[in-house]
Length: 212
Image (tube, rainbow, N blue to C red; front, top):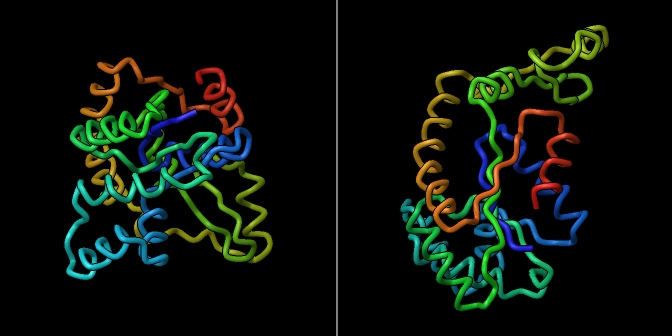
């Protein structure tokens, strides 16, 4: 099972990828984690990436493909993988297709976690952490009992600085601008599968399993 996972911030992409990884014994490859790991381990592409990042520049597409190639050559990918965070552009998608063809491990599907952007806004803007218990809550979706339980313990509902509407709308706009061409690309490749990501975590996961 070889999957590219597409989804906006707050769509539940990471949560569902972790569940799928455990149930199907496949790798969840987050490009951010992969990049940091390659740098820490001092791999050939990791050392090149480190020099680029230290100079304050963005890692090039060619270097990212090299890192992906390095990661997919490891034994833990033999059962399959979920690529999360790559590709981000149509060029990267084409480069990935070529790489996987060369490695003789073609992609099975691109899964899109589909959710209304206004729901995403509420998920992200409404996030709070109880200062007493550390429990993650949401002022729009958590029950009154859950919210009151934190306050009754003498806790506060803390909000992250970057969880404000202006920042999040910008993040979602960037995501939409980047992802729409990818959706079209994977549609043309007959690889795109759409998951309704608006239900509960269990409902979304069951939908994901049924789709793949």
